[in-house]
Amino acid sequence: MKKWKELKNSYQQAIDYMQGRRDGKITSLKTPWYKFNDAIADGIEWNSTTVIGARPGTGKTLIKDQIVRESFNLNPNQNFRVLEFSLEMVGRVSAMRSFSAFVGRPYKYLCSADGKITNEDLVKCFDYAKTMTKYPIDVVEESLTVNEFRETIAEYMEAHSNQIKDEKGNIFRQYTNTIITLDHSLLINKASFEKDKHETLFALGEALTALKRKYPIAFIILSQLNRNMDKPERNEDGKYGNYILDSDIYGADALLQHADTVVGVNRPGKQKIKFYGPDRYIIDDINTLVFHFLKARNGDTRLSFMKAEFDRMKVSEMDTPPTQEKRIVTNVKV
Image (cartoon, rainbow, N blue to C red; front, side, top):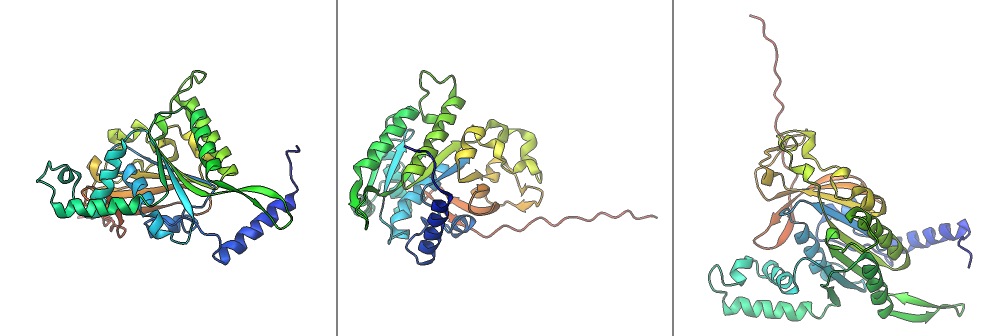
């Protein structure tokens, strides 16, 4: 089989895609945040990879969970499934975090560790579970190598496909659009033939690209940031070093080239930063999050401010904070 195609095929596909977008037949996957959608192509495009990087305790899992949890309500006219690779958090904990977001009560309360949960709230959680389990969401909880990860996704996509015939009588497979999440990239097992985790991440990046080219997948991959972010000099007020850079994403060389969107999430208040970056944004809430859109292949790079509501297990949009007034010092001769 020849490995090339005529350039006109690509142009025709692009025209078809633009017409489909214009007519509303093709749409991106809306996330819960206008700022996020606006930074890219009005949401996450299918056949794409989104990498979200943050230090522990910042809220990256919270962000991923909210995207999945609200995806069906926000995209009622789209037919899609969700496959979650949850290699760090057991399913029960993930479900209870969803309950927390729904009823607006802390996780400890749901465990009756902060006052006994009421029957009313238990019923609310039960009703919410009945609603959520109607949606086509599946979970993989066992640790996998890159090859096993790739094989599992291929098997899943084939299992949820149909054989159809086009107008010319050609038979082909039609696959179901699928959100696939990985929490997080470091938890993929190193294969015996891979010398270190960086080589595993390179293999993971190549697998993501191959899979998104073949199947209508929207990957959401969570990643750590390098410990360099914790250096004292990067957490001094008003320094450019406050900002997250491409190189701060763990395994950046392996993941960035394969990603369509890369978002670094910072929580300045956790590092006692009061004036963030050279623009000196005023940070007066420890739960303020800064979304650094480091790469937006089909959008634009920017900073967006959000707020983590950890007690309710959700992230909400907020106005861009004011900046500290720059003091003008003049030399006065006496």
